[in-house]
Length: 206
Length: 206
DNA sequence: GTCTATACACCGATAGAC
DNA sequence: GTCTATCGGTGTATAGAC
Image (cartoon, rainbow over all chains, first blue to last red; front, side):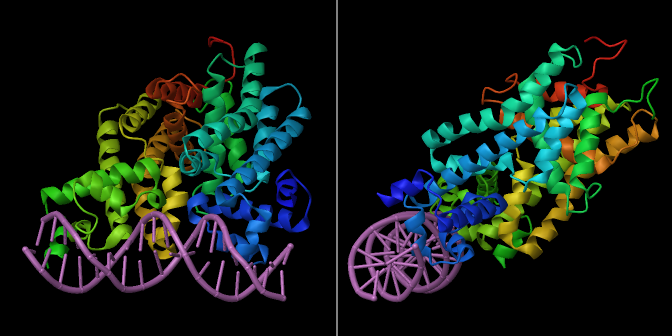
């Protein structure tokens, strides 16, 4: 079947366009607040025509978009980290630079709002790989720094989750008037706080 | 009108129940994924009966719930801070202890997902007070520490937003297997990171 | 104040012509 | 591959009896 071949990843320019506009809409507003008609409009076709490229319906389309996005982030993160050297701060900055260079993905909202709507089984099946792709490269950064004696020994999962949350918060702050109005600068500031701390101590500028 | 009197804040035991169950549902799943029928069921009445206590419909009900919750948090935060002394770390811990003692409110999701569904005007009208209530007490904590020379001079809004994001992330991590499984302990750990930093330096345990 | 009944809109999905 | 037409389901809200 053609539809199956497409679902397996066949190029099909129109299908690519559908995935692209669907991703933009899902990321901007979340699963529940995007309709198939909106996706079709943005892709330049009628709502019913969408089902030629996404025969599995809305939930399946979301799944594909999500998985593609996760793979994209994992690859980008690893590429960014590969050229970042061994030290903690530049590695965290590489993570942040990658992340702020992408459209804000609202990872936490996706996990808490969108995924449960797909059902418990589906949700669990997607959460695992998403965790591995997004969190794991960051936990490795922290783990490496701890092993090198550069960072104190704390829960790497907690640190990675917090960093992701901060990067989402920074994306939220931008364009709202809170903060310094520049995602990258804000992200770097917060990384410095995570590394050096906020406290004024001897030998560091207040 | 009776309905207006109730909307102004009349006691009405049934109306209190409606607000309570609506808050629990909205916080747990977000505006889009809660139906008026669910709220009615949880409140022990039929869907149509809801409109006696919430004549403004779903959007208005959400607004009231949101404002009540914001006021609740503002009062709780200020009470917690009033007895926390002058130093930065205990003050941040007081904020965290209050926050983790409450049902996770997913502040970021509310702002990015729920509010836009109410329309731009509505959204802006609610975002301002919400910011003032939740962020401002925390920015004051940071500002105070900076004025006392206890903390480095950085954007207080950025720091407050990051702290809130971390506290939401910690709520998310709990019950997922990530992290240490205890919201309060995780929150305190992250506050220590914010204050002292992650880096291993002389005079501090690695 | 709570109920039944129902209007009305929207959305996801399918059928089938072209 | 795209279209028109339409079905079925769901959700908000209203009307009106009790």
